[in-house]
Length: 178
Image (cartoon, rainbow, N blue to C red; front, side, top):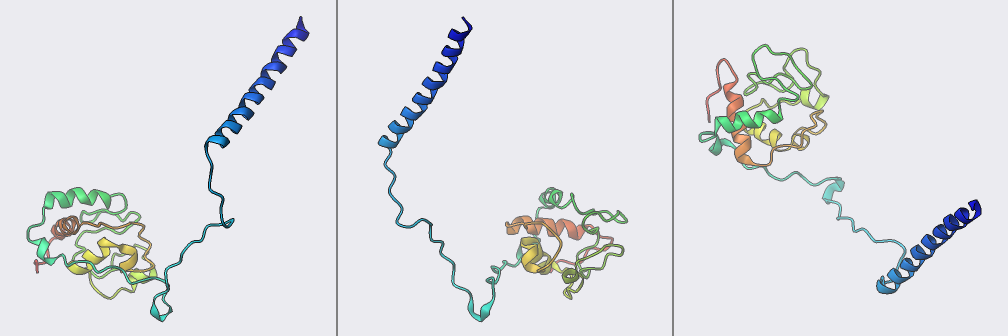
């Protein structure tokens, strides 16, 4: 009786193999893939820019100044939640992965004591005025190449304006709007 069970099991395995093999033949007869001309696909490389530079210049960021007067502070506060994982905003609050952003408008980059800035950020000469913040928030890596900040940026100009206006208010003496 045990030999009959073993025969049934072996027969089932053989039948499953035959069904799989038969379905493969049927599938190949229904689908006729076009033969490849070459064994690899060609990938086109864009032409290198003049001067031997590896990357093209970043796209021009539209000015934020016209948007600041009508910026929505509630939207800026909501947008600041993207920054809150790495930054604090209150006076005297500690640094996190990023420096505290209290009174950031008008401050020189790399100026928060006790924070280890990247060399490119610490050597940036332009203060955090409205347009510099706008360019940085649009694309931090393009604005300050070599920055440690791993944030992709904010693409919408209105959202950047709202965030900058909200950050402006995070100060004992907010800087005047342009």
